[in-house]
Length: 141
Ligand code: ZN
Image 1 (tube, rainbow, N blue to C red):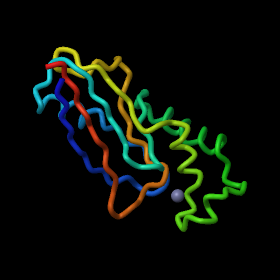
Image 2: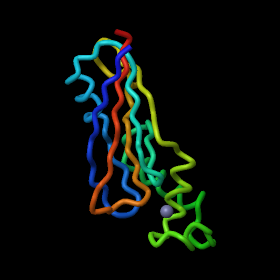
Image 3: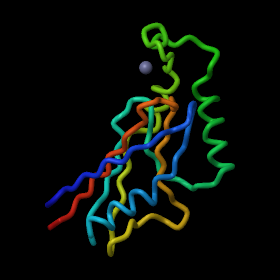
C-alpha cells in the first residue's frame, strides 16, 4: 500500500462559503497517475466540512437556509463567551456534517455518480490566511 498526500489552499468568502473542489481532487489523482485506489478528502479545520452532493445553486441555497433553521442565530452559545470570532454556530455545523469524504478511484478516475460533486464548506469563511484541504490518495501497490 502506498499513500500520497496533496495539500490544496483555498480562500473562502466570509460567512458560509461552499466551494466545489471536484476538479482539484480529480487533477491531483491524475497527476499522481493512480489507476485504482481510494482518495480521502480531509479538512483539518473545526469550522468547515467536506461533503458530496449536487452542485445546484438552488440546492446550495437550501443547504445554507437549513443550517440557519438547525442552528439558530438567536440563542446563547457557550463557545461564543470564550472565542472572539463568536463562531459557535460554525463549529456546530462542522460537527453535523463532518471533516472528510472518501471516493473510490477506478480506471484513473473518481467514481462519483453523475450528479455528485465534492464540496469544501467553510462555515466561518473570510480568513486572511485561507484554508487547507488534504487530498490523501491510497493505492494497493
Ligand atoms: Zn471557535
